[in-house]
Image 1 (tube, helix red, strand yellow):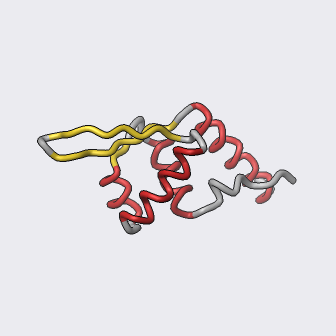
Image 2: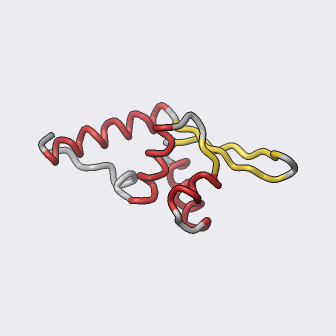
Length: 93
């Protein structure tokens, strides 16, 4: 059997990537709301995913407040596809 991607085999990183697969773009606040994780932990995990080129991060001001948004990259989408297929192999689905 193939190894599961260790970068995605983390609950919070997998949650972030799953949110991105289901949405074109998500905000940092949305991730906080959906995961219930701390802002610091989310920030660290987003940085790891960005370093791996699994997602892109953009920062802008909306109504004079900073807003961080994320989008999944082609590489990130392929990694998620591979991860889910490998997991299905493990589960014999």
